[in-house]
Image (cartoon, rainbow, N blue to C red; front, side):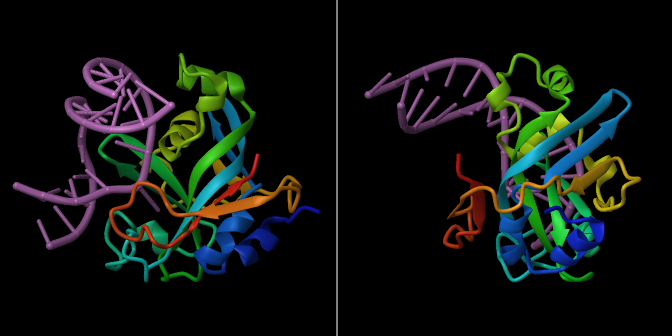
Length: 189
DNA sequence: AAAGAGATGGTCT
DNA sequence: GACCATCTCTTTT
């Protein structure tokens, strides 16, 4: 049972903390001149504007504008001046909600991923938010794209993995505030 | 096996 | 000028 882009659009119109576990099992796809990389999303976190840990908490700014663009868009930011992190925006336009893609299991383009992350063992290539962006070639240049438009270079697809796994839940990672909110979900191995 | 520190730059106060 | 939704390498137990 797969969902088309209209189904996904409706799904992503919901609040980040209810949508996040539904994003597990969806496939992230990124095209580039060098080839295509695809991965099954296996770990996510939710952020909303009511949440002090969220970039959207203090309202729209130049950096977080795409977080307010409405469900289905891509929000990419630079963290620690070093790594990029990719988010699936959720909720209505203007709301400032997003689901951070923390980890992915590669399903296509393993050779290209190896080129982009040389010397890193397969199992460790996409098991963190910065690693996912490095492996997929995602940076601020694709911030704000519509992930549900089949014509864009970075996309979100349902390849039929719905409900075939157990989901774990716990606190988010790396935060100074908001540690008490258990808004991280992952697919149990 | 776990803990610590440095890298590095855009964004906001 | 401080703060980061991180990663990797080095040092210590």
